[in-house]
Amino acid sequence: MKAWNVNRSRRLRAWVGVFVICGVSVAAAQAAGNTSIERLKDAVVKIHTTSTPPDYFTPWRLLNAKQSSGSGSVIRGNRILTNAHVVADASYIQAQKHGDPRKYLARVVFISHEADLAILEVEQNTFFDGLRPLEIGALPEPLQEVSVFGYPFGGTTLSITRGVLSRIEHQYYAHAGGYLLAGQIDAAINPGNSGGPVIVDNRIVGVVMQANTSGRAENLGYFVPPSVIEHVLEDAKDGELDGFPDLGFRTQDLESPAMRQAYGVEDHPGGMLVAHVFEGSPAAGKIQPNDVIMAIDGFDIADDSSIEFRKNLRTNFKYAIDQYHRGDDVEIHVVRAGQAQTITLSITEPKRNFSLVRQQEFEQTPQYLIYGGVVFVPLNMNLIKRWGRDWHSKAPVSFLHARDTRSSPDKEELVVGLKVLAADVNLGYHDWKNWILESVNGVPIRNFQQFCQLVTNGTEDNTVFRDEEGYQMVLNRAEALSSELVILNRYRVPRANACAETPEVVLP
Image (tube, rainbow, N blue to C red; front, side):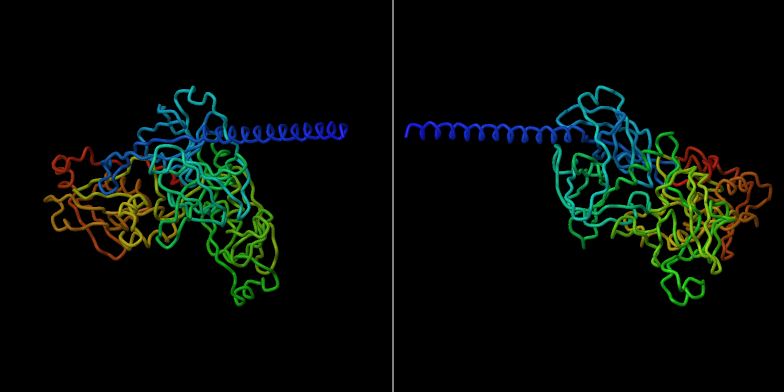
């Protein structure tokens, strides 16, 4: 009996020991988990922005300053990663750490409006003391749980929400219209979340950029995925924005059996038809209209222009091109007149705009010319979006139609007679507005810089502006020049000529 009691006592002590050891292990694990979460929280910052964008309806003025906030995350090199739209047109930026009431002056060191990403630095290096930067992780799998960190409206402290990755495919980025890979999640995303990290296993797997607010969708948010983030970080190394390449061809799907037979690929799976090749592009002289592109960079292209970029996941073929940078070569497999060929395209220049309408610009001073009281401007997306959130339906139809019109060396962009500052010199035209021009004194307009030169350097008695329908506006040159100062003073315009040297149009 005594022996049994001794053994029982020993066994009890052993079990107690096990429970104590397990208790220590559980506590240690909880403590480690709490430490990990706290480090994550510390690496997520709030960004305060004061922005003063220009007024493209009155291009010599700024809109009223507005204050907004967003989120960001600390990455290697004492930098903060956030959305471009959080700091676009910013005149003053501050960063604030989790749990710290102080705000530190910050500045943009690199920005890609196309990818809606920006990199910030903080003026005071002590801001980063004690902060552990977050690493960029891999794109999650569909249905994998993710956490969204940020500072949405409705409070001042850090918010963490959870959801699952529900879709991965190319989407139009709302900020500047870029068409890039995006992840869709069902975590709650609200104003202020923009720029915050999407986290899996303590790594950044995305940057929150926009939510679906159509009214027909619930809890649909989108984030910039790791492949786009890595591309921008690589692009930022030399401080020059090259953007995502555009090889300079346009294609259409090849699902029609008749079309497949007509172009000799009825026995080949997949492929897309080349509809147009732009002069001066990487594809010029190498890719031809009516070529059928079968593969890019080893990705086979389906007849709906999609590729399988990950097992059982498909997206637009553009993904295969998005991975490249300036200076890289891209291998393309085509079928031309029934014969298979391999073509190598070199990305030698920054991305160009191939539309007659300039892409939306930020941190830029608008160009304009006032001549005879008429305000002339280049047509760009800044002007079109000045019609508000419903610009798709409220902007002039001619402006919207021009977005789908291709540019050429002879016509790189459009010039608009925006409005008339009423005066004697322009009598008869006071109600003219949003008028797209075709020529000046019979000379076709190539771009806004050339237009300014035609107007300011002209020697004719009258300056004749004409549109493609033949309608004309005639202004007497002597009267236009003599009345200029009076008109500028009357309408409080600082100067008549803001035709700064027009660089090659480059997408942000």
